[in-house]
Image 1 (tube, helix red, strand yellow):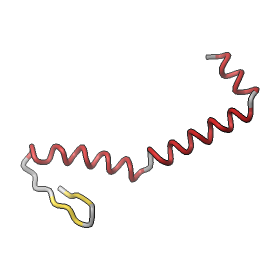
Image 2 (tube, rainbow, N blue to C red):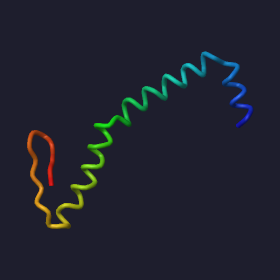
Image 3 (cartoon, rainbow, N blue to C red):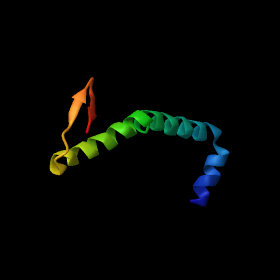
Image 4 (spheres, rainbow, N blue to C red):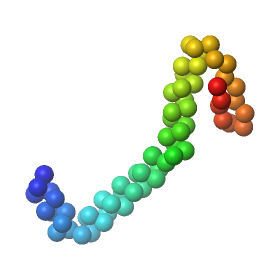
Length: 63
């Protein structure tokens, strides 16, 4: 691991590329909207089991 850290320190172009890739992944997969939608889907899977009525309006589901 230490050798990889040293290699990255010495390869600014690779380090920049890895940073850009990480940023792109974060923005595409971990936005607040994506997180909220994933959480909401998980909660709504439980709603029928709980007897809580679920309605949707304008693409948003509410319990």
